[in-house]
Length: 264
Image (tube, one colour):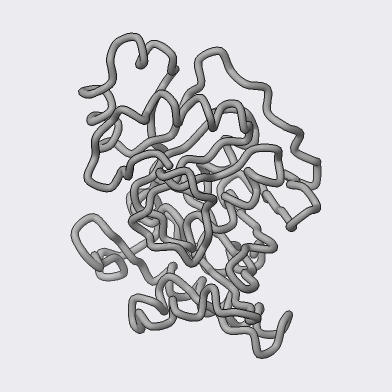
């Protein structure tokens, strides 16, 4: 991952021509760096586990059926986000990451997130804990007022619907517009939880495993455990502390959103 970042991402950062950036759909950007990074990662992963398919974000754009490789009984696959935070990257903002994970059956069994600008690597294996730059991440100490990473639209809806008493039980709510970077900041204790309505597996499969292995977890809005093969509209709330996770769900359970299902 570091070799790919050095070869494909960093030389292009703040050095992209206009014709090297496009929108897949409004607000969803892709650059030549995304494509080159995914190609190099796929080549390297094929050497590590020959025959195990790679499900990359950019490959899925070209062939949406590739997502069906995730969660096949008895089978494994790699999931790759070659440049997470592409809009930041394209705008010259230094909040972008690279995400790789390995899925077997319906579970993520290993994951890696590289905060490229700061050269911070988070890693987790099922049952083996989570590390950040090689140091074990210990269970998070619950904050008195947990701060969260939430997209702007959903944050405004929470601000509108939450009573003052419930809102006062939370700290800062913001977004870094880069899921990989956000997971790392939760692991460092800079923030306490995240919440997303849409959960594309290349954004969340690795991070959800890391939170669970650090002593917390990731749940769907209905309380079910997160799985990388789940429908992406199911939403996710994650924290490195089970106490924070439960507390946040209790605060938000009264919020009515089209994609926020009743609590199980």
